[in-house]
Length: 115
Image 1 (cartoon, rainbow, N blue to C red):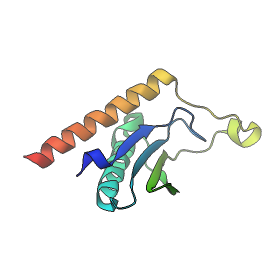
Image 2: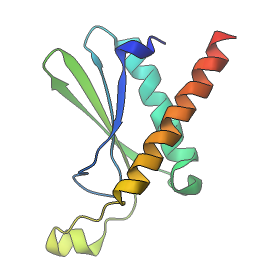
Image 3: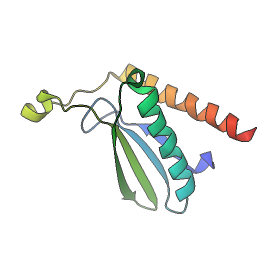
C-alpha cells in the first residue's frame, strides 16, 4: 500500500457519535484508499470499544482532487442527540489514543506486507 498517498485522521469534532475516522487519498489512488478503509473498518469492529462495535456507517465525499471516506462506528443513537441534538464525543485525550491505536495497526500491517 502506498501509505504516503493516504491520510487517516480522527475527527476532533464528530458530527454524531463518539468517534469518526476519516481516510483521504487522491482520486487516482483508489486501491490504497480501499486498503486503508479496510484496515480502519477492521479496527472499528475488532479493537475500538474492545470489539463491542459490530456495525459501522461508511460515507464517501469528494474534496478537491481527493476522495474522503468517513468510517463511523454504529451504535444505538443516544436520546440526547435525538431529542436535543446534543452530540456526545470522547475526550480529546481518548481521541488521541484512538489515533495512536490506528497508527500502530497500520505500522503492524505494513510490516507484515513488507515481509
